[in-house]
Each structure stands twice: as C-alpha cells, then as structure tokens.
Length: 467
Image 1 (tube, rainbow, N blue to C red):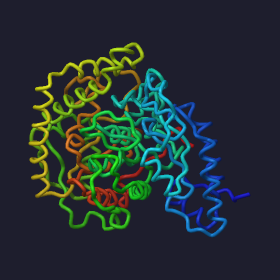
Image 2: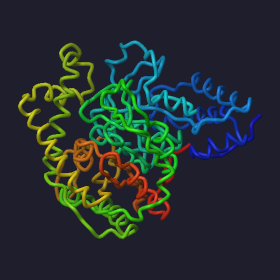
Image 3: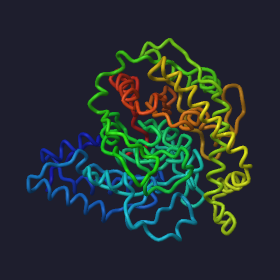
Image 4: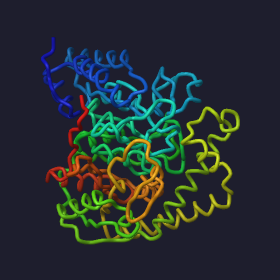
C-alpha cells in the first residue's frame, strides 16, 4: 500500500511519484473519491472516466516498477471541457443535440499529448452550450457553481474547467477560449489560465465554434503547473490548418527571469471604462507591485469588440444552421436566438468586420513595438449571482452575460497570448488580471506572471468548497 501523500500541485505530484512517495493509482483513486464527494455541490463534471483513469494510472506505476524514466506529468490527474474528443465518449459540447453523435473514435491532439506526458484523465467538464456563453448556466446539464460562493456563477464557457481546478478536484484542466472562455472562468474562480497565441496549440479533435479565433489552453492553481502543462501541449499538427509551423518554445525554464527588462504598461480607455471597484483595485495592485506607471491605448477597442461579435455570430450561426432548422427546440434558450441572429447577418457585414480586424491587428502590433506586456482586468467584476440579467459597472447598466467578455474580446479577436493572474480580494471573491503580449511571446506573459507570483500579489486562494 502506498503511503498517503497530500498534494494538489501537478509538479509536486509528479515529483512524489518519481521518488516513490505515492503511486499513480493512489492519486487517481483519491481524485475520483474527491470528485464523488465534492462535485454534487458544484456540478463541474458531465462524465467521470473512472476506468480509463485507473488504467492510465496502472500503466504509469508499471513503468516506474521496471525502472523506466517517467514523463513530466506522470500520474497527474486532469479533466477536459466536454468539447474535446475523448475516445469512447460522445463529444457533447454542452449540447443535447450532440448526444445523438457516436462516441469519439480517437482522442483530441491535446488529450493525446497529455496522455504521452503521463497525465491521467478523470473526466469531461460542463460548459455553455456550443461554447456560446460566459456563465455555464446550462439548460441541459445544469449550472456550474463557483466554489468560493455556490450561489454565484463559475464563468464560462469553460466553467466546469475553471471550477474543477479552483476546487482542487484536479490540478490541471483544459478549456477553450474564443472570446474569453478561459480568461473569464480563471478570473471568477481565482486561478491561473492561459489563452495562447492563435495557432500555437492544436485544435484537432475539439468541437468548433468560431474557426477564425478559437483557441485551446490550460487552467491550473499554480503558475508552475500552468507552465508545465502548456509546455507538454505544444507542437505542430498538420491536421489543424491554423496550428503554425513553429518550434516548441518552453516557458518553464525562462519564467524564473521575472519581469526585469520588460516594458510593461496598463491598458486604458475601453479597458478602464467598465471596471467595478474590485477590478480596478486588482489592476492597481498589480501596477504597484510591478512599479508600472505607464498607460497606453489600443485604438478602436470598442469597435474591435463589436467586430468580434459579428464574426462570432456569423460563423457560429452558419455552423449550426442545419440543426437550427431541424431541431430548434433542442437548443439551450440562452444560445439559440443568438445563433439564429448570426445566421442572417449580411455577408457584407462579416467582410467589413474581417477587414477591420486586419487593420486593428496591425495597429496593436505597432503598440508592441514600444511595449512588451500590457495589463488589464480580465472581467469587469468578480463572480455575480446565478440567474441575474444585468450588470451595473462603470456608471452603466449592461446585459450581464455578454458584458463579462468586455475586456477579453478585443484581445482574442486578434489572437494575442494572455495569462490570467488570480488576485484574492478583500471581499472574499477573487478576480483576475490579464497579462498580454505580442503573438508568440507567451514567455513574456509567464515572466511577468512569475514576478507577481513570487511577490505574493497573485495566487489562487483556496475556496470554501474544495477537495
């Protein structure tokens, strides 16, 4: 029998396994027990892959028993948003309609890479239907609740991923981000999240939403875990046309350099106009910790958000139009009307939005000639109560669900890499700050993130409900 080993960090788990302080099977069994005990309060999981988890764990223990070198995430439990293909599971993408699809024949590329790195898959996670939302108030699979306060949302669309990591059910989870679906849950649940450069990580084997700016990426409760996970996910993939032909550029070895020598600025205007007191205080704390006094503007950021809406609605509506015609009543009410509206957007509007997108990207890249990392709040406010429709912020009354992406959409729209750093708040609810770099400079994001982690300013607080 393996000795009991208490650890929630992926890096710690993998290190303990290498020296025999525990076994992969013991870790998997403990994780599965925690999910069974805690998840009924939170509703993160739509499937638990118990048999697969134990089989993968046994294989890791067998490798260690014969003296094989273990891969970097050996024995580390993780889970994936249920739009990732998992062999033998139906890829739900948060929908009722997809239940009629056959089970996936193969794992998604990133699931396969996690397997190759020794990680142990324990399940699939709840999300907004077809990734079109920021709250994970899913009509088919229920609301995913924030572990800091279960009367509040866990964010979306990768809500199950964010909550599972925040509650320490798993040290790592994979999600997707089109308009903010990694960054919003990371912020509202108080954990680290990464939306990499568009094209950095393969999307093969994930259910699409908006091909123009769908991204996949990880969540973690520690920055070291986020870096370790990201590093094993990298690599070219000819089966994803957007996955660039770039070499692996590991961030774990370089982030220890911290923020020294990097030019850092705070984003103003659009990124300052909609902040609650808590969001503004979080950005102020980060600026103080990094001694940032410079503020820069991104031109036409509000228009960029509008263009992102148009492209999102158009591509999403076109993708789902056949089912909207045949199975209207089977869509989540929070999703279907927006998809229908998107399906009838004039082509000329879509073309203009894409032209504007190219212009905007060039303007932002010019800003990065003068600065290395930009900072902004990730959400306008901390997590809001489940079911509310309106958000009062910045002296305005705004519709809540779309407004949670106010600060994320202008950045994913042009594929910039972003790390969300979690900050505990005095009110008990965390909130995140975006660290944004030029395309392919994830290392800059991680270096600044590490400076904040080392200083103690950024950390993932333990929630009220946890494993």
